[in-house]
Image (cartoon, rainbow, N blue to C red):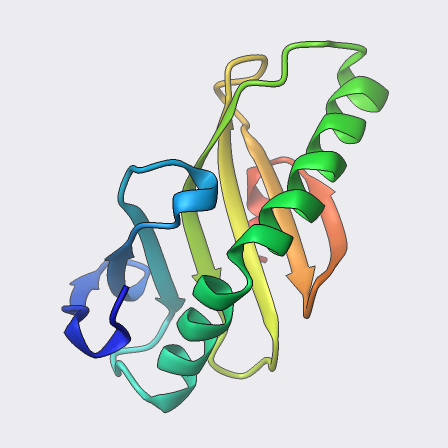
Length: 129
């Protein structure tokens, strides 16, 4: 995916773009630069980091989500879908991933990543708080 050919648009949460991360499937994923109106160098760098590290990010998040579902919900249903990625203009190398999960469609699952480590996992709001 060519970062320079991505078209930004306004969303009620901030400036957004749609990308495809093959490691997470072939659906468009909305990337939101929270509370920002500018598609700036930091946003581009964050997206580039996610794209170039997507395989490792997928491996890390997948194992953490499975462990979380097993621990919290005592459930073996592991079908989850990445819906949104949140970027934070004032925080370096931290990203929020919001997943839809069939076991809790109301709350979903949120994962906060710092560099290539899971910082926090829980319900969906973890991804954007």
